[in-house]
Structure formats: structure tokens, C-alpha cells
Image 1 (cartoon, rainbow, N blue to C red):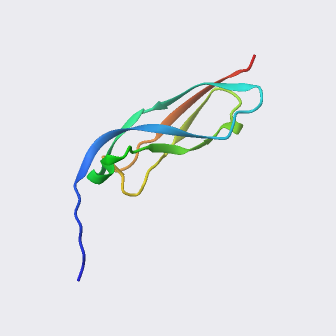
Image 2 (cartoon, one colour):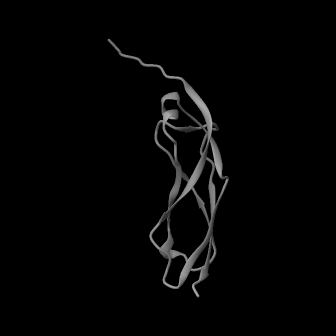
Image 3 (cartoon, rainbow, N blue to C red):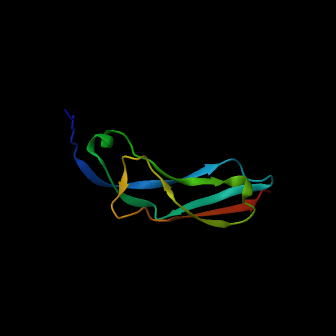
Length: 101
């Protein structure tokens, strides 16, 4: 015998968070971090709607940043969450820094 369980899949829009790792080099401070697109539409099981779904980018290592920088990142998502399109969009993360003092 085979056990089958069915669950409703819903489409929602969720915000993408940049995954910042580490600290900036000495003498620099973070001015801003922008993510484009800010949100993506996803398909997720209805039971997952009870908790907040967070999508993050691949890690961005701050110690390697010495000036304003843009990254093209992929989304890291749990296996039960899928994009509404055929694949996840590339995410652009812009990081602005300045010298302290």
C-alpha cells in the first residue's frame, strides 16, 4: 500500500533578504544594502503560510568588500518552496560603504 497526502499550494510574494557574512575591513562602514528585485512570487504549501517564509541570497562575504560593489546572486530556498516561473531570478545586491571618520 502507498500512503498519499495532498496539500494546497498557494502563490504569494515574499521579500528577499541578503545573506551578509562577516564584517567589513577595518576603516569601512556600511552605508546601505539594496536588493533588486526586492520580492519574488513563490509557490508554497498552504501549511507553510502559518510561519513567515524567508528567502535569502547566497552568502556575501563582507571582508572582501573594499568599495561600493554590486553582486549577482542566486536565491537559497527550502526544497518545498518553488518559483512561479521555471527558475529563480538572479538577484542583484548593491552594497555601499564609506570610510569611517
